[in-house]
Image 1 (cartoon, helix red, strand yellow):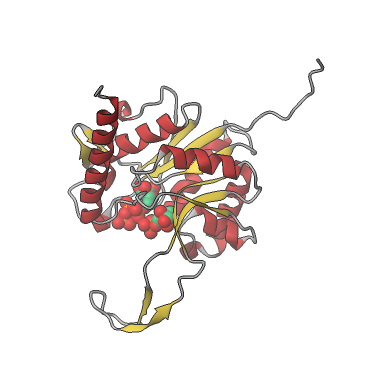
Image 2 (cartoon, rainbow, N blue to C red):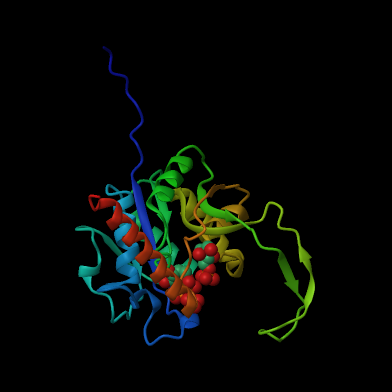
Length: 254
Ligand SMILES: Nc1ccn([C@@H]2O[C@H](COP(=O)(O)OP(=O)(O)OP(=O)(O)O)[C@@H](O)[C@H]2O)c(=O)n1
Ligand SMILES: C[C@](O)(CO)[C@H](O)COP(=O)(O)O
């Protein structure tokens, strides 16, 4: 048998932005530290799921510089990297990428995942990695829009504005996370995008789109919700409790 030289498989890293203040949540602390299950805050639940999905992946966690709630025991990794957050999500992600660049290779695959999405499914993360390995433009978890979409008339009324018209939902998707890209490609795209049009960059894919790339949309479960408003926390609690009960019942002998 002849052994042929093959390219080393790129390592996978999670980059988890967790430096937000959670203003829309209106809680007494950043939402990542609110209780999601008994003795388990949002940040702990998210990190535990990520590690179960890809135990071999590394972690770069981006935390607010003056975060008083974080405890190292919340992280299930033994070795991990910590980066300081910035003023917007994209600044925090770029800070994490700069930190990763000190130890990782340019071709390593980086999965950026909001700490505020604890309900992501392990199988979706693995499907995303498989898809991202097949393209140079990266891939994101996403879900096709399923409601009728209304554009409101431009107005200062936030609560109940009038409808301007119905938008077509054809080919319209909700962007979820994780979003997966090669480290070098994403860092360059995000740096460029932040120096030209920062307000447009609400996820990683938009930075890639701005430089002419076309990341893949990988269909993921719709229950990968982002905890943004108080009712989202209630839904995430119910969802994870139901999944736990289901897993326990399938483990119990009949
Ligand atoms: N400067 C920031 C802002 C956001 N995030 C992270 O980006 C993700 C998505 O952001 P969002 O849901 O908007 O979180 P917050 O900024 O905390 O919430 P809000 O916009 O309501 O203040 C979260 O995991 C959040 O912690 C971050 O790391 N750094
Ligand atoms: C990255 C994201 O979760 C994809 O849906 C989203 O864009 C974050 O947006 P936010 O304005 O920080 O809530």
